Amino acid sequence: MSYNIRMNNYCILRVEKAKSKQDVTNLLKEQHRAPDYESKRADPALAYLNSYSGDYESAQARFNELLPEKIRKNAVLGLNFLVSTSKQLEAEEERAFYEKARQYIGEHFGEVVGWAIHRDEFSTHMQVLTIPLVDGKLNARALIGGSKNELRNLQTDFHKKVGKDFGLARGQENTRTRHKTVEEYHKEQAKELEREKNALEKDREKLRVQQNQMTEERVVLGLQRDRLEADKKDLEAKSSAAIAAAQAVSKFEPDEPEKIFKRPVEAKTPENIKKQWKKKLFESHEKYAHRVVTDVMTWFRKITKPFEEKYNSLRKKVHDTSYALYNEQETSRRLRDELKIYDYRNKTPEELEKIAEKKRSQTREKSRNNVKMDWGR
Image 1 (cartoon, rainbow, N blue to C red):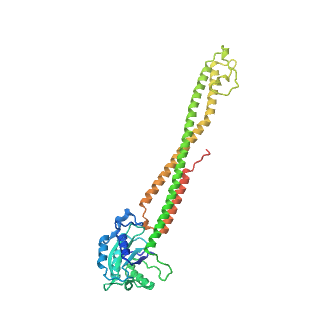
Image 2: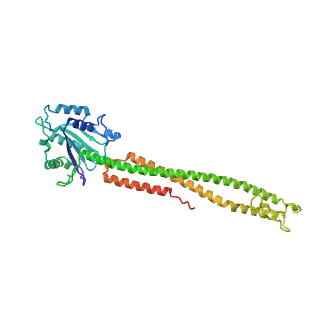
């Protein structure tokens, strides 16, 4: 079977020693996700994707069965191997890679007690626990050596016999880079996820503050709209009074001197508007009434125009605010949906940081555009 070569995709093999029975028990519980073991790194919702050699009880029983009766005080009781790749493999390649890695570990590093492929953490990896038995005795030094050169040779041999067949590269040799332990690696990934979670929480908090501000603005605009409605009703009442006054003027009889009104000095109100005109000499009743009604309607339109413009402007602001709030809610909903389905296993920490920064920038830009309103109109 042949596989496509991936550039800069490395195979990873790490090993750590378990020097006590409690260490072995903890590793097996973590490995098989025992009911009484709480993993801070694993997502329970993805546990069904994991693969196991069996359950914790059977692995612990096999360890107890293989463990010799006589144990040196400083003996290493177990070897915990971590096998992974720097980038995700396809499902078929992944299955074949981990199967071959298990065979390699079982042939070179003692009896395999249990193994598990974890897909419920930040990146997919396999853990294999062995008992370093040589001629029936515990002898980890004979299997993995005691120097860095021997460990380097072990990693080179693993790449040659396992990783190379899958197009995976070996890491650089003779570098001063210190390889992290499994626990250190998991702690770094947990910190990275925590930073990402805090950043998203800050964005959500900003969004909630903006939504609260928009809600308050909507309340204020609602009060202004109510006041404008009241002013509109008042103007309608005054308009009715003005029309009634104009109708009264149209019935003016010239032979009734008491109905000839003098120009008043009072303000121009509907009650006093009929006092502002005198019937011209030889002017017919119809022409006089038409002149008075025309002046009244011109006055009414003049005083109601500012209120009408203000009402229309505030009505537009209410509509714009509602539309901006709807967009903010849609953005929040899409963000929650993306977080639920986002597959972190396919990304490196650097890629995740870039994606998170890009999404934060997009969210801030959309928020500014949606709430931007021209209050000067």
